[in-house]
Length: 137
Image 1 (cartoon, rainbow, N blue to C red):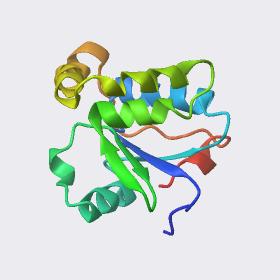
Image 2: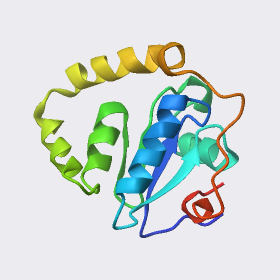
Image 3: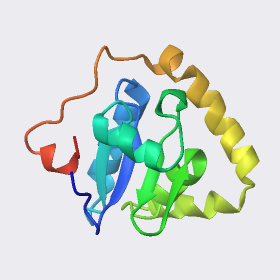
């Protein structure tokens, strides 16, 4: 599959209820249609992760890929995503000044507990026909 050159790609845990809620939230506030999505469990997700030298089996993080520019993980990915969102959420990017170690410490706490706190699905979400075009897999 050829990746869209003009879209940023968000890789997320497709069985995590928190992550699926975040994807729904991002889609709702992505008024500029900046993002495309793929689950970390999908073939394209695994391929994109491997191409960046990461082990797909070891990930518990959101990943933002800005084609031709960079990729971001964890809290940095979340804050970079916020740059594109409507409704004042773009102001969250201002938290990038907080040291990454501190931000990722909080992120890791939530990531470790996300299934206990928010639950887990048996399989990845299936987008509605209206949203299918936003997903790469």
